[in-house]
Structure formats: C-alpha cells, structure tokens
Image 1 (spheres, rainbow, N blue to C red):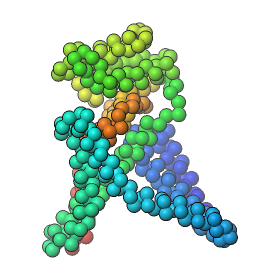
Image 2: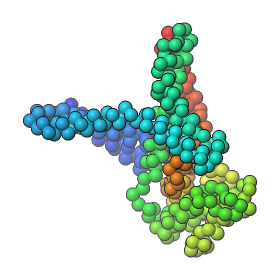
Image 3: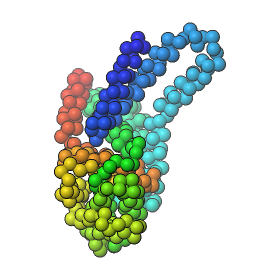
Image 4: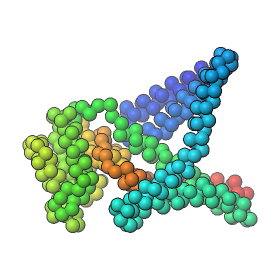
Amino acid sequence: MWQIAMILFVVSFCFFVGVMVREPRSLRSGVSFFWMMLCLAGVMFLVLAGCAAWLASRTVLIWILLILLMIALICVAVFPIALAVMFFVQGLKVIRHEGRKPANMLSLAFSVMLFGYLTVWPAMGGLGRSIFGTRLYILISLLAFYLLSLLATYALSAVLNLIHLRKRRRADYIVVLGAGLIGARVTPLLAARIDKGIELLAFNPKAMLIMSGGQGPGEDLAEGRAMADYAIDKGVDPERIVVEDRSASTEENLLFSRALMEKETPRVILVTTAYHVFRALLLARQQGMKCVGFGAKTKWYFTLNALLREFGGYLSLTWKRHAAVALVLASMAAILGI
C-alpha cells in the first residue's frame, strides 16, 4: 500500500514542480502544494504503520511519536481560535496606528466573524424548523467553508510566489510599483519598495529600473518622479532609471510600464509590498506579461489587514468564477435541505 502512496506523492511532487516552473501565478500553486504535502503525510503514516513490529520493542520511540502526534492534533484543533485571536489583536493595532478608516477594520471584522462561525454558528443548526431555514443554514455553512478554504489557498499561493532561490534573474526591467506620497515625500512603505528594487538592480546589472506611479490627490508631483529622485539620492545611475508617471492603479502601473519596454519578450521583475505581490502577478498574467514578483517587507500588523484587502481584490477580479461556485453550492443546499 505504501508503494501506491509513494507513487501518488511522486506524481503530486512533479505536478507541483511543473506548476511552479511553468506558471506559478495562480491558485494552482497553493492547491498543488497542499496535495503534495497531503500525499507526503499519507506516505509517512503508511511507512510508520508498516514499521509497527519494529517500533513495538522501542517504547521510548513510541512515546515520542505519540507525543508529537498529540501536539500536532492540539495545534490543528486550536489553530482556528488562535487565528481569530491573532487577527483580533492585530486588528486593534491597525486601528490604533492607522486610524479608524473602514479599510483598517478588516482584520477586526474578520476575527469577529471567524469566531462567530466557529462558536455561535454550529449551535444554530437546530434552529432551522423549516425546509427554508435548513437550506439557508446549509448554504451559509457551505459558503463560509468555501471562502475560508479559498482564503487559505490564496494566502499559501501568495507565500509560494514570494519564495525565490536567487536574486540574479538576468532581468531586463525591474518595475517598482508606486504606493502614494505625502506631498512630495516618499512614505516608508514606498521607500521599502524602492530599496528592494535598488537591491535587485545590483544583482541584475543589465536591467533598467522603471519607477511606476502617477500623481494622485494630495501629491505635489507624480509618484514615479519622486521614486526616481529617491533612487538617485541613494546612488542609482539616472541612466538606468525610467519614469512612468501616468498610472493611477496597479493595472495601469503594469500596462504603462510594459509600453516603455523596448524588448518584445523582456525578463521582468515586479517589486511591490509583500502582501500585494500575488495580486499584481495575477493582473500581469491577465495582461500577458511574463514576470516574477519580489516583495518588500512591511509591519506585520498591517500585513494581515492588507492581505484581507488583497483577497477582496482577488474576489472582485474573479467574481464570475466564484458566482458560479455559489450557484452550485446553492443547488447542493437545496438538495441536502430536503
């Protein structure tokens, strides 16, 4: 039996590697990684089961394995509540540091809804005294499970697209995405992006650095121009900088930056804040731009809140697909509620 499990693991491993090499900019990267790890867990379980006779005479080793298994089970059981608490605490930090704007309330709202789904919602299953109530309960449960699974897959795919074994990519262009100014001053978040672009420029000596960002409300000049000035002050040769100063969104950042590239099929690196990389890569894929993404670091409490905002942007980008899934789940709820 373990031989079959090993074959399944090898197949899932090859599929995962194929996805990451050919086109990692999709949820397939996260899904394939999950199934690969699931197959690996199956192999390990069957191997240990096959060694039961050998383990029987080694009491200390058995206790170590049992303790590790108990720790793993406890972690799995506690993780959802710990996740809700973490988002609640970090949500309070975002509000304290960044203000009470609706966009800063996402972590707090998510933690409250997750806690309610885990603790309050299961108790409401017995309240459905009609067919409609039962179907509604099943539908909301299925939708919640789907969205949570989708969020987990999105987060895993985003992390996988941030992992790079080397910074030397023989890049032709390094595109740094803008993030807003305070007057004419580069913000710390934007400075981190530019610094990351400058770092990658040193590893890719033939690359041009494209600073992408137009002039928004409350800004004294275009973001691209301010970003270029910042990089020049850091010692970057002005001849290696190209300014894109018309864009007002990530989609336009990519579109207008691509128009400035002279090569037909250039090697491109996108640089933005870590939580924004995956959605930027998805948008670049939609536009037919081949690229990899590198993320600049930001504060942890802000990352969680921004990740939820990016996930909302992903849902908006792919709403037709998820609307179709919602219709399928509604049909399932109608059947199961009979």
